[in-house]
Image (cartoon, rainbow, N blue to C red; front, top):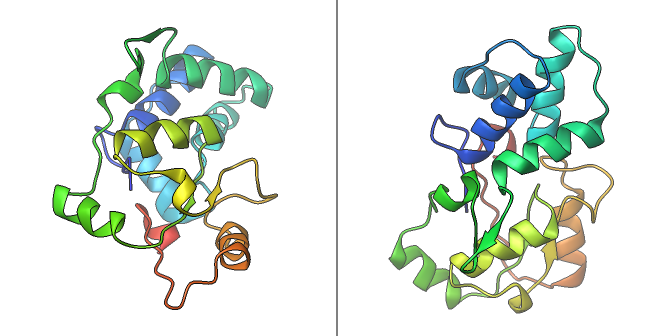
Length: 171
């Protein structure tokens, strides 16, 4: 429900900038989209790592994550918002869609760390307490692997589950 694999997507830009800061040659949003479309690259950290690998640069994943987060979240929490690229992230659902979601029983499976997901869920005016929140650290394999969805279905007995994603790999 947030972010898109498009040029204006802050996580796309953060992946490109993190790779660049760590020595990779310049990449463009289309390069990110190409990786995501090919499958296996839903995680922005892995996208930045792949750009570095393609350029023959070995960097520990933890370092890539640190540099990515400096771009994505920023360095300061100010007036209830991060000062990084996340502050400009466009939320996908319309007001009427959010109203409809609030009337449903819902859960979230995200490729983000829990605190980032909670931040965006709050921006949406939704509550994570309404259902189950499964983040990237709650499952061994991240999206689009269905383990997170299965975990939600084990905890929540939905009569007619509906899943939506923001990339083709999640469809």
